[in-house]
Structures are given as C-alpha cells and as structure tokens.
Image 1 (cartoon, rainbow, N blue to C red):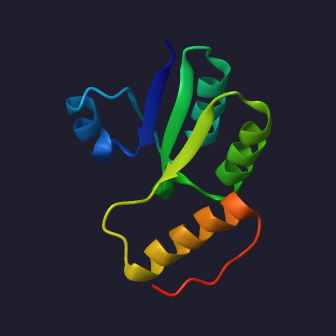
Image 2: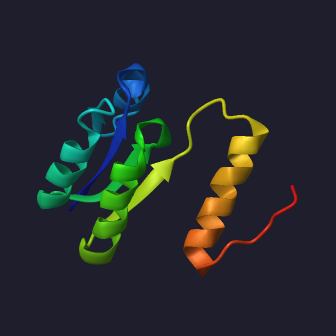
Length: 106
C-alpha cells in the first residue's frame, strides 16, 4: 500500500509525527527538490504541502506533477490565517476545480 506524506516547516513537525503521519520538514530553499524526489519514489501516492512553503516555482512544479504524476498533491492552508487569506484559499480551490474564477461572498 502506498503512503501519504506531509511537508511542513520544521516547527510543525512534532504534531504530525505525534499523530503517526509520515512527515518531511523543509525550508523554502529545498522544497522544490524534495517534492521532485518524493514524486519519483514509488511508495508515496499523496503529498500535502504547507502553503507557507509555496512560491511561484513550487506552484509550477505542483502543476506539472498534477498532469503527469499518478499521485495527488494538495496544499494545506497555513495555521492562523486571516479572513482575507481564507477567502483567497477558497477562491483558489474553486478556480482550480471548475477552471475559472468565481467571486464568493462569505
């Protein structure tokens, strides 16, 4: 059976490990390399990445992998978000799912 893995900054590692979830700690400097490495390993089928590690380069890599990799990659919302960033995250998910931007009133 394939595994799931979560990638977060170092300060979040303890909680995931305590819950028994496979985890990698990463910094913005090495996240791209780590995501590519994980996608090449046959043992993982689900990867969740903390949104605090996402920049344009990483987002591009995720988009590429979504098209050609059999696994699933999701972006975890960062803890303690403001209402504005929650709305942005929801809008992004809707745009990704249906293919165009929808204005939501929460």
